[in-house]
Amino acid sequence: MFQFNKQKIVVANWKMNPNSYDEVVNLLNLYIENINNNKINLDKINFVVAPPAVYMSNIYLQLKQYKINKIYLSAQNICWETHGAFTGELSANSFKSIGCELVIIGHSERRTYNQETNELIAKKFLIAINSGLIPIVCVGENKTEFGEQKTWQILEQQLFFIERFLEKKAINSDKCKFLIAYEPVWAIGTGVSADLAYIAKIADYIKQKLDMLNLKNFKILYGGSVNANNAKSILQISNIDGILVGGSSFDIEQLTKICNY
Ligand code: PGA
Image 1 (cartoon, helix red, strand yellow):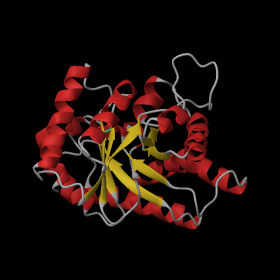
Image 2 (cartoon, rainbow, N blue to C red):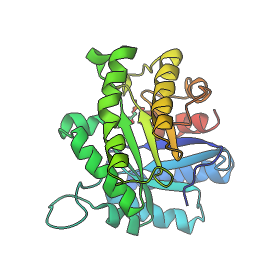
Image 3 (cartoon, rainbow, N blue to C red):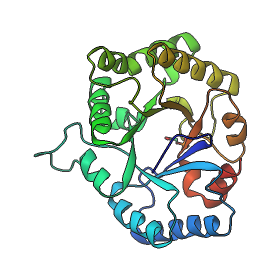
C-alpha cells in the first residue's frame, strides 16, 4: 500500500505513452529488469507509475506476477461523478477496484485541452478522497502569470477548494491525505525546469498555506522538465518531498538515474 514515508516520492507520468500494448510490455520489462538487478532500488524511493488507464490492469497483474509490490499505480484522471451514464469516463471506484491507489487531478494539460476548471478539479478531489484514492493535485502558473506574487495568487485560486471543504467539513484535516504537485506550466515538456530558488519559495508558500489549515497528511512535489541532471538538486529543496516526471519517465536510462538521484 502506498504510504507516506521518509523516502522521496517519484511519480512517473507516462501521459499518453506508450502508444501500443507491445511497447508497454517492453517498457515495463525494462523497469522490472532494472529493479531486479538493483539498478533501481525501490526501498530508497517511494515510486508511483501513472500509465494510460487502458493498460493499468495488465500492468498491475504483471507486477504481481513478478512480485514487485513497491510500484504504486496512479490514474491520470477520473470522472467528476461517482458512477452513472458518462460515456467515455472512468470512475474513481473502478480504478480503486483494479489496484490503483492514487490519481493525478488538475494536470495543466487537462486544464488546457479539456477546459478543466478549479471547480471541476475540486469535485474530483472529493471523489478521489471518498473513494480511497490519494489525489495528486497539479497546480502552477503559466508563462504570463510567472513571478512569485502572481504565482501565489494563482495557487491561492487553485487550492481554495481545500479551505472550502474543510469549512464545510467535507474533508477531515487529520485524515485527508493528498499530494500537491507544483508544476509551472511553462516548464512542462520544455527541457527547462524552474530554478531552484524559485521552486523553494513556491514550495514554502504551499507548505505554509496548508500548515495554516492544520493539514498534516500532505506532500509537495515539483514537476516540469525533471531529468537525470536536475532531479538531485530539486529533491534537495527542503519542502520538496518528491518529483512528478513526464518525458524522462519513459526513457529507462533517464528514469534509472533519476531514481538514483
Ligand atoms: P515533463 O512533464 O517532465 O515532460 O515536463 C511533467 C508533467 O507534465 O507532469
